[in-house]
Image 1 (tube, rainbow, N blue to C red):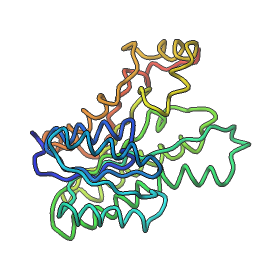
Image 2 (cartoon, one colour; image 1 turned 90 degrees about the vertical axis):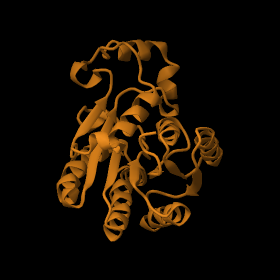
Image 3 (spheres, rainbow, N blue to C red; image 1 turned 135 degrees about the vertical axis):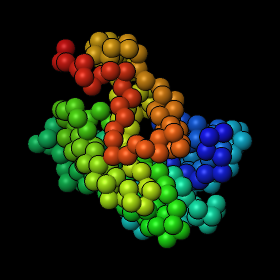
Image 4 (cartoon, rainbow, N blue to C red; image 1 turned 180 degrees about the horizontal axis):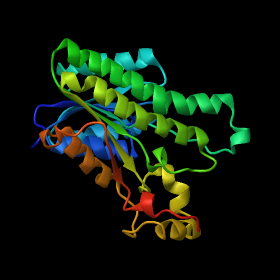
Length: 255
């Protein structure tokens, strides 16, 4: 177990990639703070998976668009386990609309969770690490769309572009404290957010034509990358984005 006795907050861990990350970290000995906003049943399932993997978990409901809720999430994790070592900023949402039809409400919803939430969750954990004079790992789950345009999802792409620059900037600022900051950018992953795509054979074939490895990614592919970046094996890596996309980004072309 490469992460024995560590504690991680995994935001948005009630399903999909976040759930897989929580379970995978648990298998390496990490205790997990499970965050959810709307899927309580999913969060409880994640807790069962963590416990089945031989670790411990607590479940905390938190709106990542609220700084107060973020601070409460971190405080609950510290209260339960005494510390936080790893923060996985996984929670994210997307809303499809032509740019001329994007509402202020939807714009704010996407940016609040995907960018504001990532920054203030990082800030809150960093304050804890600095106060306790310990190193730590911040791992942001970004997207290939921090680089690749995604028409009809402008706020989502903007948020992920912001995460890319945040990762680079904070990595330099926090390096003197032994805190590394990295991102993982998944491509097309088999998750609930892609349910419509998975049920559309024509669109799925088009996408597969853009992926050199000729398969969709699995949540476990991303989770394995998180374990690496959280481990001591990645102690000299900071400020970078690891693309987990089967080669999609640099092979992408319109059909």
